[in-house]
Image (cartoon, helix red, strand yellow):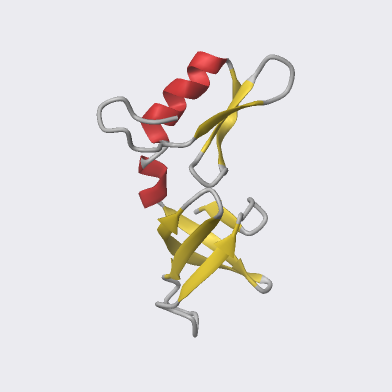
Length: 106
């Protein structure tokens, strides 16, 4: 789905269970839960890009570290570790198609 005013890619609306639809970020992370198509579109338009600026957490071994998204695409996400207690603070990590078991909103 693309924003009407500037053509910016804001994410996807994909079929979910039964007749419901799921709003997904550019890299496929679910926003909200399954809903009616129009509600999923409205959620995506409202939050699809804004959510990318949020703080996120990335699984690093057994730990979850605070991070920010640096680059996103349907294939990869690059994060910058912002967890001050980590030896990896400031490092960029490239993730291939990360799911919620690897990357989640903080």
